[in-house]
Length: 400
Image 1: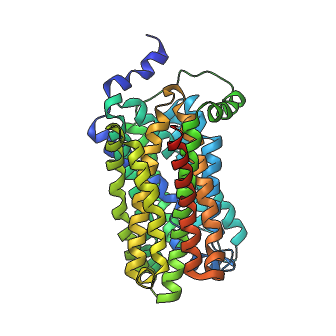
Image 2 (image 1 turned 180 degrees about the vertical axis):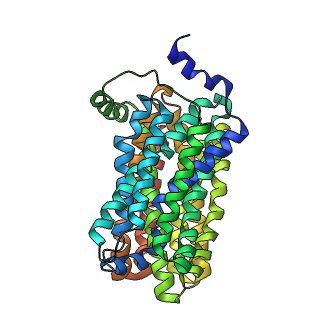
Image 3 (image 1 turned 45 degrees about the vertical axis):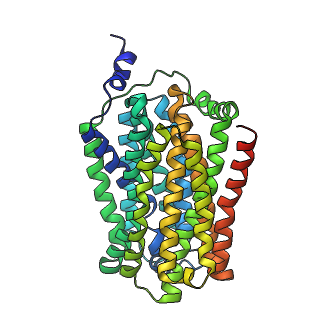
């Protein structure tokens, strides 16, 4: 039998519920690496000799590293055997987390380099999702991707309360050392359970990278969906980087209390499976419109006095998470449908744009909050998905 055909065979078999659950867990555990630092930058920065204004660089450099990994590593999923590639990146992530967790006091610049490397090496999750889309039957693809994205998004949302709790009781270094241990377990799980997949695509790495530009030019849907979600994720990252500063500074909440606050945001993860079902049922456009409307409304709540209360800020977090996750899953479903043979590269373009937006939102969060307070965060945050909404409506009017 042709090896490439043998490698593609699992797509006809589909995915068992147990494997979908396992992939969802792995995605959540891997992507959490990018978010552990977000609520505890106030603890990490002074210990490492970084100023308050530069504290958010820890988060933004992690997201920038993730964007670079998406751009440079994820396309290899269309060229190299997937399981081996994912395990290699997971090993690098494990080493990076261990180095970050053993950083000494005053080593701020070195830690920023480790943060960049943690993001760069945590991209196996964006190889797992296209692999799942490849293995799932067409009629179940949205549901499978939505369920796995639910695990991924729970990882994003639970990483913040988990790191806050651990840092409050055991110190921030324990967060990264513990994450390295989790990655070691993930490496074993991937090696034992993940099916092999050898892509049919044959090209040099340079040609593979050039094909990213060709895909971006060829598919308007890819450009549109990348722009919408980049702006949505910029608002998401801006909010979640700034809100711990507001909770600690304005309300005097401890890290454990901030952890409980962040846990509320995990409610928004229910959007992922719902979005997958909406997309499978042909309601992608209506779902995106609802998400793009909800995100700016959620942030504008913070301009009111009740909206700037702890409960109001929590409501903003739940609604914003719901909107961002719904739009992300719908966008992924549409992007994956463009060209099955190029899903790794399509996902690389889509997710790179998203995390570039996220890095931008995180980078300006500390300075924006310091200069203009929560009103500045709410206005800028609402304006970002507001721009996406305007573009979406213009495209819908043109029938695109």
